[in-house]
Amino acid sequence: MSQTVHVFAGEFDSVEEACQYTEEQWEPEPDKSASDEEYSAWEDRNPIWQLRADLDVDYLDGDFIETIDGKDRIEYLERMLTSDEDRQSVRQAIMKEENILVLIFDAAFGGFDARVSSTPRLRYVGAYNATPFC
Image 1 (cartoon, helix red, strand yellow):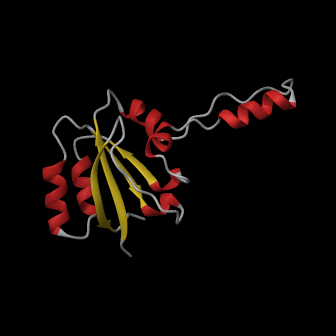
Image 2 (cartoon, helix red, strand yellow):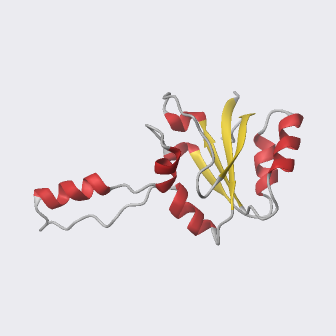
């Protein structure tokens, strides 16, 4: 089963820093002494998800996003891609200093239209046909 994966590349000091950007972040939940108004304000502020804000999409499901680091990150992505042409394109497109790949599968958009592009922290490499690992 093939699906589209949107590939982003970026430079971060660590995978933890990248995940702070690519994953939902939650403030600590108020304790039981918090008023209904305080709890409601906390709910309105959370989660904080900078990638979602920067992509300016209506819906984003983190279960369909992968943040990848390590020396084999490009090979990992290439194993998913369904065509040799895409593998070659990805290898040529990712810059040496870009140490993080972010893969967003179409399912992450929940069926809503999403126009993806580069963000302040990630460069959009392109959309490719892929077979995700199970």
